[in-house]
Length: 111
Image (cartoon, rainbow, N blue to C red; front, side, top):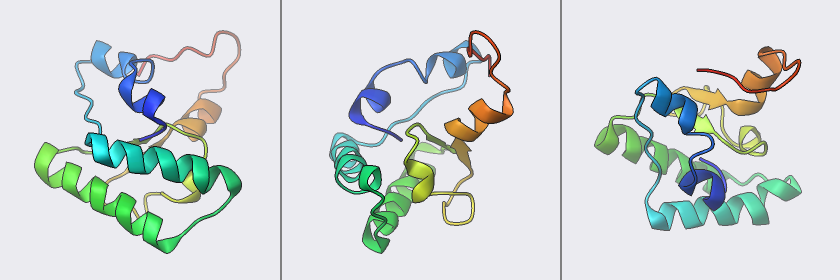
């Protein structure tokens, strides 16, 4: 999950593809909703219960219909809303992964 650009482009997907891990994105309607909530709410520090519930519904649908095992939080604002405690599947917080990776030079990681 992330902005439309993040969900439709391959820059976050490439390390997974190299490890033959399939990436699933929300439907077009869901992506539009996610994108709007990031730009109109989360980027302004606004966290709403109904937004969380919709995101959880999307993740649950992807879990049951697409068999996802985790969700990539591909936007720095998404951890304001989602974490392992509220998400139906584990969250891969890219900011936390980046920090734990100890970026020293190129900041390019193999997953």
